[in-house]
Amino acid sequence: MSRITTDQVKHVANLARLAITEEEAKDFKNQLDAIISFAEELNELDTDHVEPTSHVLDMKNVLREDKAIEGLPQEEVLKNAPEHRDGYVKVPSIIE
Image (cartoon, rainbow, N blue to C red; front, side):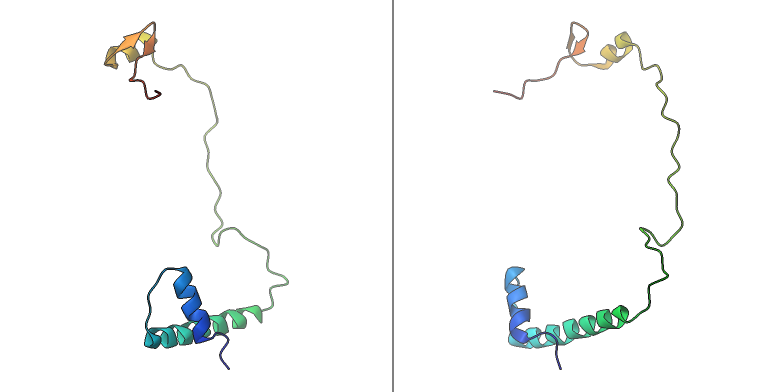
């Protein structure tokens, strides 16, 4: 017994804005039915003693300590700016 109908496949294709032929709809119906069958097999597995994980590998983020450090001197930064005024970099206006 199929878990998905050809009409459902056509409906999903329409939602995805895909034009499919009748033959393609039948092929997709069979493929989607196989996927659903496999997912149902996975539901039969006993996962009571399996801890939930966010990643299959045991990974930890390695972060450096967040320390405040001295930045570049203002004069040195402004030397590279094409235009500056009153200690700030001047940029073109984007608001009308």
